[in-house]
Image (cartoon, rainbow, N blue to C red; front, side, top):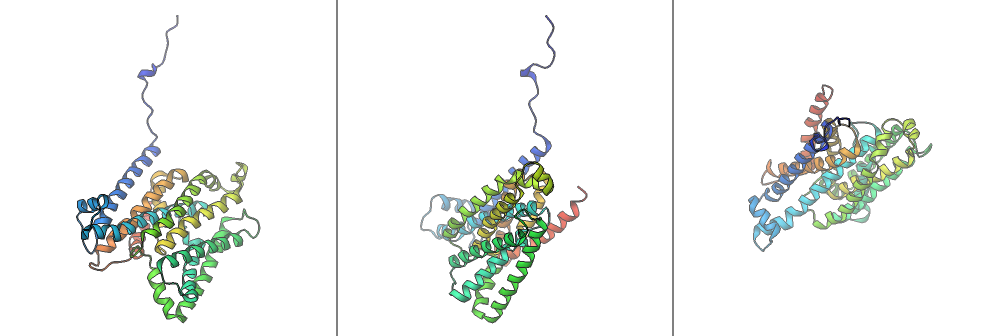
Length: 348
């Protein structure tokens, strides 16, 4: 009887993860741990410091103590919103960069933020809206209308139009909307006073109800974006290659814009325009784990949440007892980080 060759199954070496998979798992674990630490810091840090153990105790067993009231009424809503806004912007940035095949693209490039800003100004001026919930609703409607206009203009020669046309349509529409916003705020001092607090991007004085309204939009946008991952990866190879692989390019682009609207529109409605998160986070994640939207999208969500929470915590500390809005801090943090990534990327 011939001798059997090869290694018996019980002695065969276990399958080891590929280097890219190992990097993905390691980065995911690090980002998840960072988000958990930053959540605790967000509950504890502020004009009234609360020890971390007291903040966690107040979170699980609330009472009528001052620390418990501060944690539940002020810091839990802004922490939840920080996670939602950061995750939404990180995912939206990844989708926009994949859609336009431009690593320096961001959600604002498609006119989403400009549409939200114009709608907020018109709501203040024409309808007298000043409540946070009303401004959030106006911002969401404006973001949706702006994205729809970009899609119509960019698809004027067919829904499967070139991504360059989408970008040009977004830039042109954003310029027009910024002009309208500037004209209205110059002519209406009351609108300017309300608008200038919204436009910097802030998590302060937000209610938990805002998070409950925004969460379904962010979840739906994230699920839709993840489901489009393989299609957008194929589209990144070129429109002709995507079609040869059986991809319906026009449908993929349209659904990707819907996902960006849900993600970026929900985040902007909740906190105002927060810059650099959708630009820096996807770029940094790709440098570590490489391309592939389905693999990088959860990491972008964790990275965006970590960046927004960290910026919010830093904003509470640098000018105590006052605060810097999170949109200002992300701009200060994001610009040097983007410069460093740009200098480091070609060497890698």
